[in-house]
Image 1: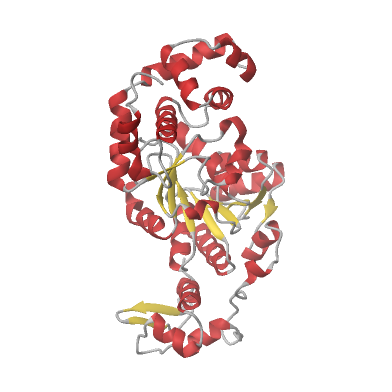
Image 2: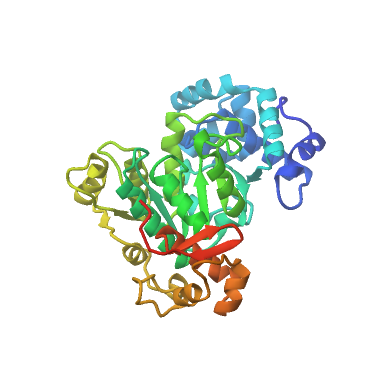
Length: 408
């Protein structure tokens, strides 16, 4: 163990509020070494990944901090002497005991948990990233959301989105939630934010992957939205708490979005949009890839058209197309039929609207009792109907809207 890390007792005290399960001396030392690595490297550092896989976190850390060249381990990991020396030049300037301790303090105050591949909640799909897989994740929210077997779709796109793109995003997200699908995105302005908002409104599950620390909502204008994601899903980062987002971290964050999702759908993207980076990761991982077409005159859709033309992305015009990419239909994806036009509803949506009033707001529990459905089913349906204006949230509950006007 390296000199700059505390003894086992102090390690347990520092880590106990951040982890689940038993924390003996061995695990405490290992977790602290993992945390130290996350402070030394940038996301996706394959050299660190290969060395840790070969030597283990503690031994690899000791060698790196001491500036030693563990020849046998380097040979086994396929790391040349030159590459090793270059890596040390990147890592050693970041050896800072106080910064590492401060990051743990920030995590404790923010209620952020530390998750590693040895934990049962770790998402197994991240193993597909190989040497570029994260060594740990910092999670604010429900850890179980990450390992949930629920089908997951990444909805991503331009920050400078159009009303068309946001409307399509919200419509697809809400319908997928109604079919039991979870949504992952990056919490950015534009398409990402529209996807998260639609899921929260519909009462579904969403996960936000941040480029900075999990304690640090970014963009700041989405602080309330990110807090909402943490309350019903999970906010995730692989960099220590307190870390600022950088251009590189945004690009590397995208690989996590792609790896966590079964399908990635780009709703809007310019010719050089960062969303194309996410699509590239999805394609490299063998994940299904979709793109939403837009007006040929719209620069905001040029990237989507490029994905369909050059990268074999499937054309996506509705949630049905996404379900097809997921391998559906299956019973779990179709717990609730798609919403139809006014006058044609003979499903659970009709039961909910029949139980509501145009004038008097009613609580969700009252609507559920009148409709003969569970409160959870009613919550999901109300969220879906909110998007087209069919229902309105009012003081004292919910009431029916006079018209069904799509949300722009």
